[in-house]
Length: 241
Image (cartoon, rainbow, N blue to C red; front, side, top):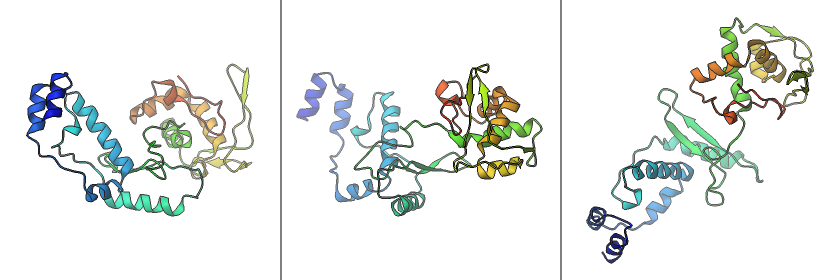
């Protein structure tokens, strides 16, 4: 009560908050709580952060205690993700970001933001900013399908130098293996091998506006420069409005 009274007198909490806190039984963190924190630490940290944001708008805080927070965590998904990361991630400085989502509802069922939370609580899923890269190709091809493409639309995919900025600059995309097909391939094949030549040619063919509109229809924010920037094999190839 002494601490609560001092907090109230110094303006940190209201009288109502002091009285409410005084009525809550003190619960000490036990070994069970510590064990729980070993499961999904990145997930739980994000939940706590979101709870703080929601409650702070109402002048309340999770630290007051007494709250019941329901999440979409699936412990089977989470444990599976953590076990596979522990098993297959190399013993090096490499990090990882992983998240599984329930497709019907969009609920996040598991989340891993790094190899070891105690060593690095920085969340590579929610805090790290990365270029979307080839993850945007299916959206590009969805737009292309509406423009008359089909899985058997063929394009040549030999080494190609593209020009942009009204011919003042050039861009030569490469594939992850450093090789080129050297002959026409279909859209279906381009998706399967994530071919960058096919992707750039498709983007030039249908235009940036149709690609951006498809992304917006799928709920992807393309209004900011950082979200519109694509990098397929070269840091200077950008897709902006």
